[in-house]
Image 1 (cartoon, one colour):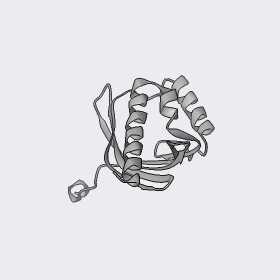
Image 2 (cartoon, one colour):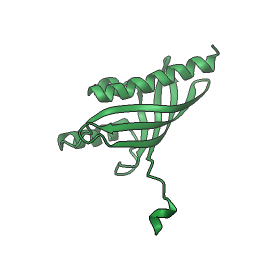
Image 3 (cartoon, one colour):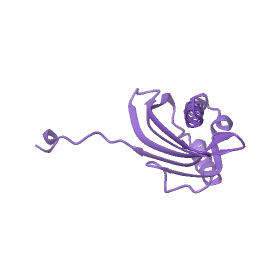
Image 4 (cartoon, one colour):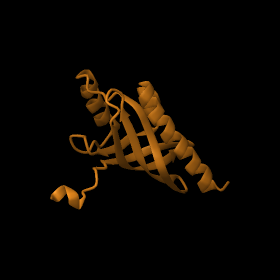
Length: 140
């Protein structure tokens, strides 16, 4: 395997582990994949979160209000990962399934990663909810 392929495989495994950690409720393991200065931009967030501390504050408020999502599935599919030295970019579709309703959501995700001390850390996470496609039949 080439250097880039090894890096891409490590990034893919890290992304999968991060979402497995979310499902397991293991915040420390989830956070081990994030850089301290990670920026987080997601459709449902109240604006861009510019550091891990801001992300932690948001999650603490959400969780204490009992609003942490309870999911039965959280999987990154259709991954495309490129690596250039100590920088990587992962693009994928995140599929989630609500544990009580079974409703699925799909989000387009781009993660920018940097290798720090041999470990890949997400420095920017951008996730946008994919809304159902508009069809001409809906307009009639």
